[in-house]
Length: 220
Image (cartoon, rainbow, N blue to C red; front, side, top):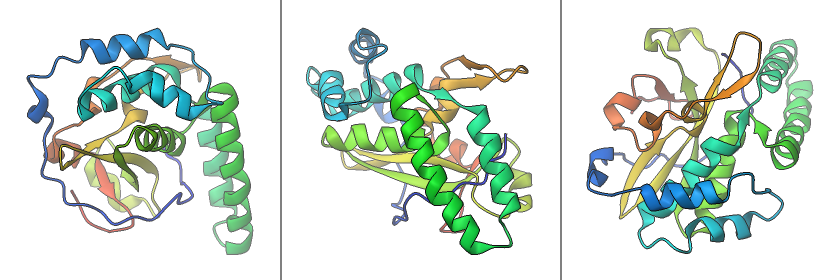
């Protein structure tokens, strides 16, 4: 599903050489169980949530796993927000001032809905991952770019349509996409939780087949 997004933040793109296989000997059972124990927790006190998810875990990757697991099992991708933003972006494309005002208004709506209803779109997922990670002492960035299952269609997009994260663990940068891990929207417009672990610290080469960095204009 396509959506043209406002840019949440601009960052320097760190070099990515790390791989998910770096943690093949890590057992994430404890991290996942902690996230499950806090199923349904509210978002009105994010520092407390970050603490509850991570204080019992010793390693950076386990802390990030608990955060990632919680977000992907508690936050819904809202198809209505996606469609609404796409319509407005097209409508105001030729009028920069109106587009800027829409982006400002929509940004507020997105994060109010995330906090109150736990529904959002990809920028909300990326924001929440970053915020929880930073509250837990982890270095985490938001990346704005292009996300498509068919890489050959990247050239048909005229603006970034997706956001995801990079996270620094044990001195290396990794990529992840909580939106694509969380589930899918069915034919009736209802979100279905269907966790896909592939996008948790995915191998960079594989990630680059469906993700292109927008602001930098380069591939992974």
